[in-house]
Length: 87
Ligand SMILES: [Zn+2]
Ligand SMILES: [Zn+2]
Image 1: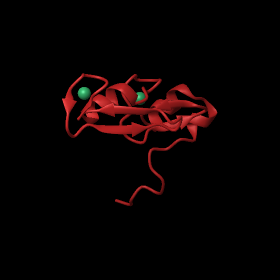
Image 2: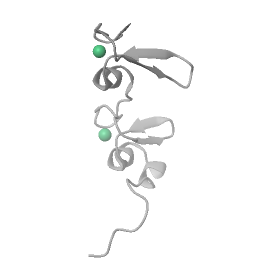
Image 3: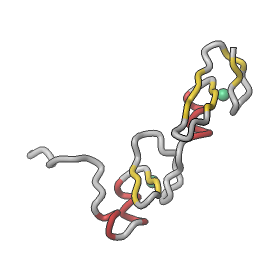
Image 4: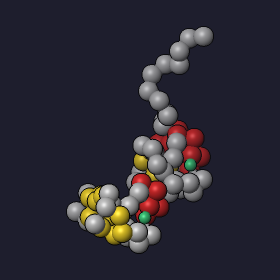
């Protein structure tokens, strides 16, 4: 048994998340892990749960938010690689 560090639930299926710095965190759910660990978009302030975008060390939820905050580099960010399918 392990206790979630966010909500305190003692749950037999609790799991650990190891960060790049070597810290280990224990959670009882993905929701609690996101609450504690997900980066926050610097433009719209939502929790970044997907891949997100990193520009100049700042995190954004999508290319639109990166373009809104980051000038030249942000303008190069796209949400998907490749050409739009012909219709
Ligand atoms: Zn929890
Ligand atoms: Zn955003």
